[in-house]
Image (cartoon, rainbow, N blue to C red; front, top):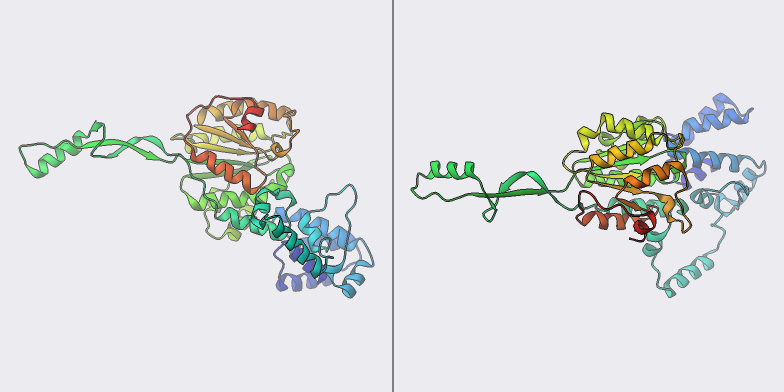
Length: 389
């Protein structure tokens, strides 16, 4: 029961039904072997790949100390402090669940609130600048709620279709003759038209490999919010293979949408073959989704398992097929970031903008940048100039 409470406090959807099912499963399998217990509880509590790191750390920390359960029963779980190994970075929401930050009493919590008020720094402002990787479970839920309200406006562009406009520069001869035949007047009034303005299609390519797993959960919520807010949005995820999840993200309930995505994606938190997956996108999907001046959001850290083989050619073709290619990289948040890997060097020459994406503020800056109209080809600048912009 206390282990299920730990998982629930860490943000996993564990209810009484799951707990009763886990008890029955453990009774059937037994507790003689540690790996049997691990996979039994894993089969009951984990239903999405992004929950696996939380469960893995929680299991090994909770069950490694024979006296931990006794302390939990006597002191209650929120009052127990557990430190992670030096070589393992503990997930913050799991640390909160295990009581790493819950040892403070009510007086200390009140003092923190008073200091925060004295510095006039609101919780929303702190949340805006906080890295997704460092958020606790409550902060992550608040960030998802903020992302749900986020709109992503795209500057309207001229299309090849026309619409009626009395001040338009072009004469609509068909509408003019129809009006004349309908009215039967001697005087013919000229009907005019102008090119129709419409936001371009949006295509999102998101990396869900192991190196991006800490951010992929939040990005999926971001993609769901964008898909629900506008039409003509096409979403793809890739690791070692390419998966189209557009249809799954169109469900209004975000939890149902995430469950369907988890069932459809088979290469979650694995390796990365960016060149191969982008080449597959170019061959199978580019003609269908990149028409009418589409804007492409490429979300990846640029770490390719194949060492950038064929990546330059694939990105060049993708760049020439779309109106605007924006690379969103969470590694760009570091001051000393340098594109040293072969994959990053192969991607950089073929993007129009290079932006960090690691917190709510970076997503809002992205929305502001997309609302500004941009040309079909922006002049490629160095990574440092694009970062300064």
